[in-house]
View: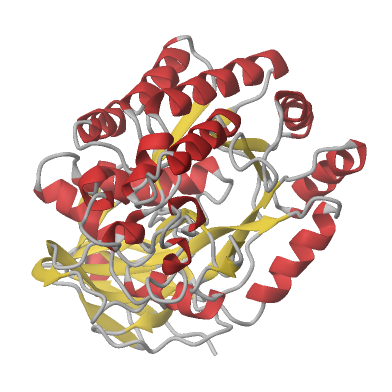
Length: 467
């Protein structure tokens, strides 16, 4: 049975426009927008009317980098697809793109089917997949073509984590050449993992075991060097490149230089690099373990370069790299050896609010907020205009956002399945009030009314940001 919904009285904010408009929704899609008080809007009848007076009406967030249930370092990310997508909805995100993992010695198909099984019937919101390539060979290169046809149109490679995910330059080049032919987009974790492992070994030999040394051995120059190398390999292959979780000023400079040459090179950063720093890694006792992620948190002075990159479009996307591990029972595996702390932070619930705080603080505009959190990730990964905007024909993934309420971020009130908040005690202005996913209310005035299984798999077209 079709339910017609009208959202009245709000300020619709997209990447392109801000307009005082009412929104008509039917059959899970946006049907029309019309100015408040206009004859057209006045003529609409509806089964359900949502009052958005003094609120923003936003497209649902698209988080293009999450790791639900990811096995890592002898444990696994603490959010399941059920808990993680529910938390995402609470934070105003209505689509995630998670990472299916190929294990060395196994096919891409095996890895992808494993992730399909994890997510199927468990998600509160819509989801898609990237594919992590851990073993580049003649067979897996052929499989890349088939995955692109199936709607898995991006492939992540690692210059870090030797012995786990690492690919050498030859394997990276072959995968890039294949993606140049099949239209896939290569995503790169750009850190020189071979050199980092030497520095880890030397630090531990000196007795430097605390969490803060995780940041000290993963040097900004080794992120910049790997970013530079990835760009040159992509140039040789004639392939576009998307660099994930950019954290350092030097890496931003490499991407900016490439873009100034007109190269199809793109960059993503994450809220943790914009709002946290090595000060957190150096918190007393073992508290710094909460903030161990890779690329690592950097000294605060790098934040200005990241914000500038977001304003100048040298960085196009803010994703979370949401990969939570509980402080008790998971992060503490690394007591006495920082290299054994599982790498990852929780954040899927906090991204939209933190970026709205950046609007309040004057770092970015409202429309840029929606661009980096909704529209561009949808375009970058072949989901636009189904996702990432409010326009006739788009999925009715809509967030009613209260820009005035002040909230305090805390593990006591968040919905992620993790025992700490990376932003504990931080006050932010703005809060998600109501969330619709394909026209169905998932969050209703700060109450969860969704259910596991509402979210469906969304096949993606190839990168639309190149068009």
